[in-house]
Amino acid sequence: MSGRLLLFYPRRWRERYGQELLAVVEASCGGGRVPLRIRLDVIRAGLSQRLRSSGLVGDEVPPEARAKAGLGLVLWAWALFVLAGTGLQKLSEHWQLVTPHAGRAVPAAAFDGVVVAAAIGSAFVLLGVALVARPLLAFLRSGGWRRARPAVLLSVLAAAALVGVVAWAHHLTVAQRNGGDRLYDAAFLLLAACAVASLVAWTHLGATTATRLSLAPGTLRLEAWLAAVVTWTMAAMTGATAIWWASVSGAAAPGSKMIVVALAMLLATGLAGAGAARALRETA
Amino acid sequence: MATNDPPLLILTSLASGPKHGHALLLDIEAFSGTRLGPGTLYGAITRLEQRGLIEPLDSDDRRRPYRITAAGSESLAAALAELRRIVDEGTARTRRTAARPVPS
Image: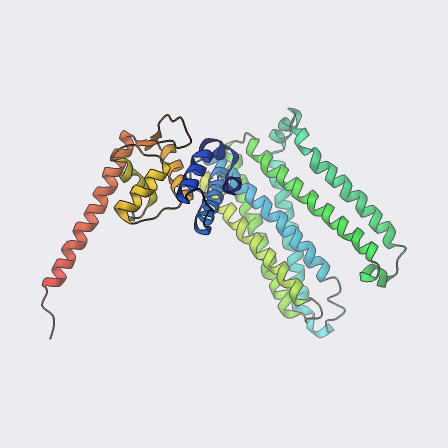
């Protein structure tokens, strides 16, 4: 049992201190069952050590690595926001149909706000990638492309699943496409899983590649400011979504599903804020 | 700096000689009444070692002892002086308050 507790720590830390820590844990509980208090203490400390080693907390790694960790967190937050945004897009598909014409002005303006902020945020994310295009290409040419293979493979799989599901959907009725055909539902879930896995793989690739790139201090500072702008667009989208949700009827956006979407947006915005603040502080 | 600050407690414990992890926990509990968890202890040990305030000694088994370095002794002395200043100030203020006549 106590050996598994070490999995909460980073590999390097485990190699250096793992056996010592286990010896103390075992001595603290007389070789018997590890009490919950000690287990929680070790888990909390392990997660804290992971945050420190990644550069998101503390000063164990150089300032450049801390700034890159902050940028990586913004990238992960953006990926989570994209998932939440996809959920919002699905939930809001037919809101105009169930909202009286006279009451559409506010939600329509709010929804337009979401779309505009999404476009600005996406443009700044792409600008951030474009800024590091030269060192990124050099990294890929020196063998880094091998790291991209899982992400490319998952993207191809997601694209193939999308083509298959769309082709199938053309042969089904509206009722079959909306819960009337279990096999189609399963295929749709498979497509969603492939898309999420692909997004996670590309985000992981982006965040880990960023830590390996050699960037000039000015470029890193600019990336930190871009991350801050992206965070503001996420905050704007979250706010606009809240206004849209409050101004449409319950039938236009099911409450329980919208709560999940809204919480994901809030969480992503909070994480991005923490990451951008870290990057700005470390590049100041 | 709080009196239950793990790095301060570890440096204080090591000031009387090298100790391994479990011996540190027992000593700290004995002199301060603070019961540190193993995870908290090793989190503090990691940071103290990285800052050069303590150093590991050779060991044949998993129980590696640590000792305080010269920089660690200086850091401990500075932290204790800071605490002493607060204790002295707090004591003086408490005495002044106690000596003041109680308004009727």
